[in-house]
Length: 288
View 1 (cartoon, rainbow, N blue to C red):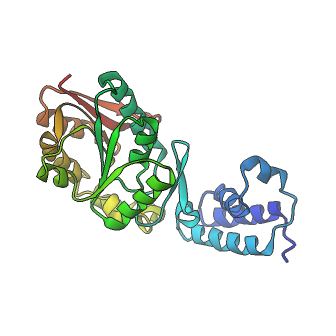
View 2: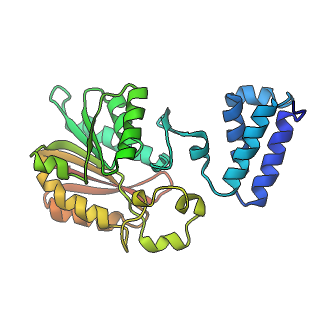
View 3: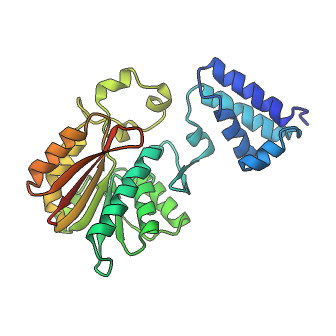
């Protein structure tokens, strides 16, 4: 049995991660995960001895993170909107900024639609399913469909929906193509597509570029390839009265809002900044 105390293991991890220029707080998150403790219990047990098996797993995980593997892929989950979503290297790790996209959609839904009517929503490029599942659980009246082009990703999203008891229809396919073929239309379209310019791979952290799926990150020379394709398809997939909500990369708000305004000349289109003051969301309200 190891004689290391919890606080000693934590101090070792902090020094080790600092040496590799990683976030020192990652040590606490990993150690709490292996000890299965919330923060208050963890802090109350700092002077306890660490079981040998836990120490072994913890040290291996800290080394993996030092080499660049994101914590969420090591522990297998991430929190989003107060819920726990399973993640693996087939999906992008849900970001806190995307919670703001969900909030923006809910606000506009409540303002524009009467839930006595059936409101059909599609989440395009669902990834882990974080957006679709959250919207369904926050607004149970919605009829939610989630789509992704990559089957392993879609399967993980299904797993998250089942675990969190969100009733969602899943469709494998490229953007809105499956629905256009069947002449299906939606009142709400939400998407957080890949939006990073290809060249940015040169300066981005290897924590992201070596581990998160490139198909979910990069989108052409200016990062707008997916928006161009999606927005071109939108007029054939939305009802006369509709809401569209898109997450964008910093500095892309104006370009994406222009694309939407061209596709829907009479729509009310707005760029919304995130909590850090960066343009992060573009919303279009059509036919109101």
